[in-house]
Image (cartoon, rainbow over all chains, first blue to last red; front, side):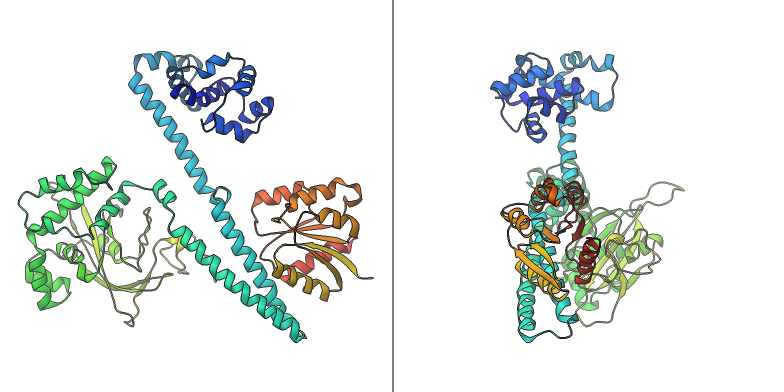
Length: 431
Length: 123
């Protein structure tokens, strides 16, 4: 199978060696460039006259294009060398490299293929309107309906002496189009919300860990009071279907070890007993239980009944753990809002910050936040401490007093005249 | 004598609104809801202006425009394209096909009317 299936790769390699553009070769043999692209990526079978034509245009024997797997590896290496601008003499030793270090050669060729695939994904994501026919159609539908509504509404608003028949007619159109607009807007949101393809493409180790933790509702009863927690943790990670990458395993182990340490020092049962006395007051709880506030915050986040959110960041401000809560969005790729109490705490190690906040632009849900930063582990003498900060988000019932407005990330934040703004918002004013 | 415009637009409510606005401005408006016979109709009607949607059932606005411009009799006919796809690629295609003016949906009626007047003022 491999022999024939990779003819396209060999055509691509030969074409690049001949310094021919895809479009030029396609024109020479009378097919479209996009069809040649499919052939070159082994997405279309090729044989017969077309193969002979391509071989002739590339001035090679047809067999060169259909021969075995070794040639494909060398082809990928040559292509990689070409892209990297490796000089002729060195690039010419691709055969020798593949022969002497077949394993390394495979790795290099594999990396190169992966790069190709990723470039395609990035391109598709950058120009989604151009590449995603469903999205393009949805947007077209939205704009078309908006156009109909705008024209009709402005006739109704601006024509002083509109006859009743016309007025009724336009009202009916307006009604029909606004129904259509709502339906297409809902469809679009549903599509963007539940798109597995893009999710997969963007999946990072952090996201794998988050999926792993949410699948268990951030609750690990088995680690409470267990003796050999390290063995338990290894068992949990070993055959988990969600944690695919080694990086995700690494991160998950750090998180679970922290949970195990916290559980050993402050079991949830003890926390619940203290909660019954002092209520959700982290400082009072810390005093009553003789525990650091940070640990109390983490343990409170582990109580399912509080439905609290939790965000932890390291000294660089990078979010290392998040338990999300409805109404407070944490951007996926860093760059959070510096106004969060979390970052205020990071700047004042030891100070316990209590602040009511609400995030702009969303449902404006209110949260009572508690944040503190504390040293991770002793680093040694006379060294600045490696701290991390954490913030507990407790949902406040509706109707409470309004909190300090904060954002999620500048790009989607509507806050005007914000002194913490570091880049413009893509939400236009008044939109 | 009232001026004559052929409007090729498959969205009936948009077509109705445009027809109303242009009629109020003294135009005689002929509406077509698909692209298949648009070129023929325009050839026969010899209008003062064509308003052309891009995404049409049957034939695209680009094809229609291309056929019109291929005929010397219609080389200078003002053609305004209306489209919801305001991407630069579409504008480029429209420019190459010889469009006189390109308007992105949703547009305002005033904007559309002004463009129509501008396009036909010199004719």
